Image 1 (cartoon, rainbow, N blue to C red):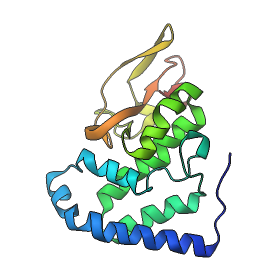
Image 2 (tube, rainbow, N blue to C red):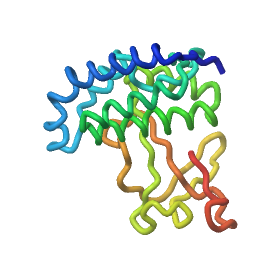
Image 3 (cartoon, rainbow, N blue to C red):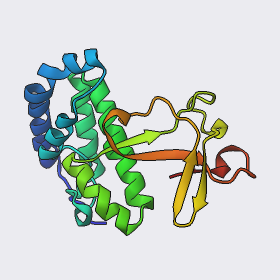
Length: 188
């Protein structure tokens, strides 16, 4: 995995760029998005165009290959500006979903989704929470059963972060019902 090493000056320059983008492009519209409960889909393309999504994904998959500190700067600057919902949505997209694909996806899945996630064309969502289990992953009931090369998922999910804009949904499901607790669950 190739990463761009950064000295403090590189990080400071990046921070200034992110801070300026947030102040000019996000803060003026953030209250409207908070009130409506939804960030417009077009904003994800703006974030991608600005180079703010999944910045630490390797270059071979369309990322900048930056070290994880750059990702943290993005989160810090959105949070510092009071854009908490969008900051959370971006963490789920860039730091959780993109990394599930990077670390456990097939090369075909990485090629299909990662460049689009970096550009903002595809938004990553995560489906863990269930009506009866909340976020207690050991208590989930949704199941995933193999059907040839595919998985068939049965069950209910709620509070799917980024679900309104999702292009790919990472789902936690029980794949081995004979095992209790988290051992029998998988990310699908």
